[in-house]
Image (cartoon, rainbow, N blue to C red; front, side):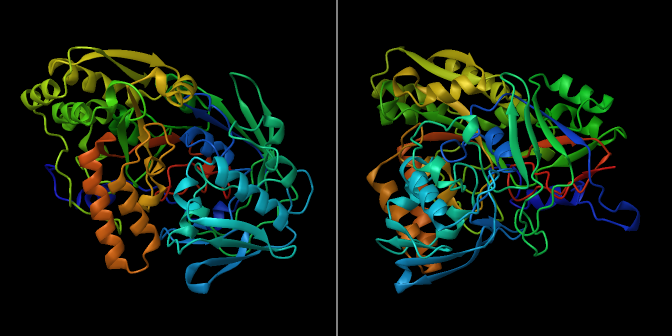
Length: 520
């Protein structure tokens, strides 16, 4: 499969600075100041329930919080929840809430807000179907208790409640009980976080301010869990589409932090004293999705033909440059994670144009246009797609490459009649259940019987060995059904001003966080 051993990530960790900042006597946190964050584009919305866009979560996690959060060991631990207990053989999850937690409108969070939030997420949340197909109902248990009644045991329930991207963030009942599948408007961006939403200047910046009445946890900060302190007065998120402008602006002090810098600049920036580099050592991956709901890509043989044509090494090299930032891997999970396996990985990076042409002929393909959507908002999306499109054209496919800004692509991909292929990326997740395409409602609409059975076994069985066997069957189904093509593992990196203190390694999730961060 890959040309390098599976210890590639260990090797990377040995040579890359993780930028873990320890506080010494002379580095005491300072309260005040504004942090300006240069992001690659404007998020489509900040409604965490219905969107899985990284940009959206990077901003919204500062004002919207979850019942659980991940610590450095990828363990989901209580956050807005005080504690939780599984009863009745896994068919009841009893959650005790923290008391005196305030929303940004001054109202105390109670069970009625949590129930309303979970119910809305269960109906319309991007990741919710993986869990809520097993949920019977959600009820309040007094002012500070919530009960999730399950139809059957669901092993990764706490993982689902901890993930903020497309996940069950908590907002007031009066917002949630009227919310639909459409993103809520900015006036309803009300949460419990250390920062509060203030303003979104259309096409320009998003402004958050410290919430002075924030009720923080008192346990030590640990990953995304534990204590969150808002030292900064303001967080300002500014869309800056051009990577060179993000880099030069950070060097000049116009921005304090710039996300997602091209791989070919890494080695130079790593040596540049005017900035610091922050490498996300938890690997994400690229995804070329096939439309299985409508159109030409409903033909499984044609999907297999396209998969056969692809060679992922030049795809990854074109976008990330130095091999320090990528690795060939066709498995659903990354090496080193609990659920990583090679089983069933039969169709990855075949680079076989002749096989692709033969399969396309068997599929009855006669040169019809294949609509391929990609954004230039993320430089790596476009760079990977240029190579993928060339490979597909060389194998005889008539590719109509359509370029959009990110918000437009997100809107169009939800409409099955508008596309055949689209390219995106997926951030690192510690559990297969968090992969967006595990939901049958996620654009691409993967929902085969083999997938459903394997995923059901993985989530409902409690024995670890049986759950691992289910992951292996799930991965086998992935390469048989071909819901998408996985490019391989990729590491992204950001740059930031040396004036920012408290920046962590951000290894566990793909969302930059700025609580417990200050500016000297």
